[in-house]
Structure formats: structure tokens, C-alpha cells
Figure 1 (cartoon, rainbow, N blue to C red):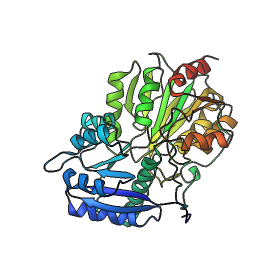
Figure 2 (figure 1 turned 90 degrees about the vertical axis):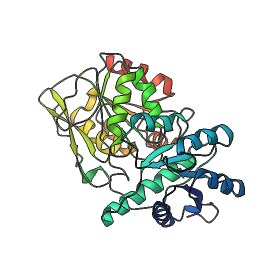
Figure 3 (figure 1 turned 90 degrees about the horizontal axis):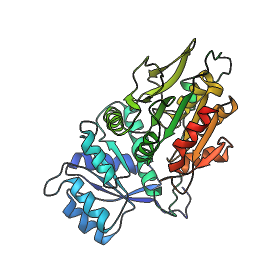
Figure 4 (figure 1 turned 60 degrees about the horizontal axis):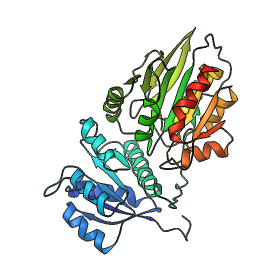
Length: 356
């Protein structure tokens, strides 16, 4: 880490001593993060915050004396600090998780559990990246990701331009991360009932995507569901990649469908936007529209460039409306974006591009 850059200071608030210890150990391995303390409940957390203001708070929902959501609401009203909800309840209650996001939580992640060494390492990557993204989700706050070995989309799908496209049906492919849950709602609510088939990778925990899709389905004119292996891409339908599974666009004759598969983390993520975009470039080519939105890191930047090189039209969300400008910035830097748009204009412009 650059000696001039201070590590992200994290306060852990969880009533479980075991969870506090595991989270502390996970975060301690990253020299860009410093655990400044841990508290067993919100009342103790308030005292710790009075002594030293953290950059990020990792917060449980179920706690004695005061639950995490009540504390989150009070915190955001009085002393806004980026908060990551870390709970075993996410995914079980869509309303609970969406409530946390509505109250201002930057991210929701699942509590780390005992597993294999690979499971531990992947949990470490996800949690550390969530902390850095949360710290960056403020004006004039920039945190660089640690240099770590990461896979490209090659480990899931080799790059190729030999596929034959036998249809003119359009496919919209969207990738997002931190801040994406709200951004996706805005975009999808702007799509008409008969919109072209849409596929989405949103970095989020396993078990949360089904309830997230259900919530969007209730709010939008288009149909929204968590993708299942073999689902067809049809007009008016949006498919969201399941948490912890890669999502690929495939084609059979004139029919587009999706493949849901396991595999290594790609660009530090599973599902990966790069994997989705590469498969869309291969099988949909010039029939596709690619959109990269708010999020930390560079997942999706190279994939969006591949889509553009395959003849697709491409869009990046602008800095002003991005919670974190990392992913769109990297795509723009590579020259992958035809258009750079504010959030509220993306849906309308994407439909225009599909009609050309």
C-alpha cells in the first residue's frame, strides 16, 4: 500500500464474539484496511464512534437492546457513515434487506461461515472489496484496490469471434455493483413492457438475488426473475444472475438462452460482468446493447470493450450519478463506451439504440 494512503478504518458491530473475531481476522489480512474496534451492540458502538469516527461500519441486524436497522436509521439521520450490513438474514427476507438499502446501507453481505480454504479466501476477497467500495462511496474519497491475482473471463469462456448470429432480436446486457440495486430499479422501471430481452449481473450475495428479482418484478412493467439454467431470452423479460453463479448468454439457431454455471472468481467476482459481456459479445454481437453501471473495481470494462468490438452499442453511467465510479471509469478509460449517460437517461437511450 502507498505509505501516504491511510488504511480504511472499520468498526465491527455484532453481538457474536465469534463473528467479530472472524471478521477481524478476514480484514486484518489486507493492508489497506484497519479494524479500529468491535462492539457487541449499537450502544457500545456509539461510544466507540464518539472516540474515533470510522470510515466504514460493518453492522449486524439481529442484536440485543437495539436492532441493526434501527441503529442504521438513527446513524444516517445524525452522523452518516458508510454501512455494510453483514447478516445471516439476508436473502431470507427481501423486505428486510431492501429496507436496509433504503435506509442507506451501501452493501449487504452474508456472514462468513466455516468452510474450505478456498471458501475462506473468496469470503475474504468479497468482504474486503465491500469495505473498500463502501469507503469509496463518498465524494472525494478514493481507495485503491489491493493488487491481487485475479482471473479473467478466460477461465469460464475463451475469447472467440466465430459464432454465427441467426437472428436480429436484441439483447440488453447490464452489469453493476455497489449502488447497483437502486440504479437497476431506476433503469428497469424505465423499460416498457415489450422491451428487448435483458440479462443482468449485479454483484450481491447468494440467496439474495431471488428476492431482489421478485421485488423488482413487483415494481416494473417488465417481468423480472432470477435466472435459471436454460431460461430463454424473450421480449419483456429480465433475467438476473444468481448470487455466486456465473451467467452466460448462449444461442441455438435463432433462440437466445442463458447458461448458469459455477467457476472461479473472475475479476474478483462470481457472478462476473466480464463473463456475461464476453458471452453476449460472442453470441449476440451487433444485436446487443451493453450497459456498465456504478460499482468499484474494473469488472465488466474489458467485457464491454469486447462487446463494442463485436459491433454492439455500449453505454457507461456517468460519474455524477454513480455511487462508485470505478467500473464505468475503467470502461471509459479503455474506450469501451459509445455513450456516457446519467442514470435517469439510460433506459430511454438504450431503447432508442435497440430501435436503430
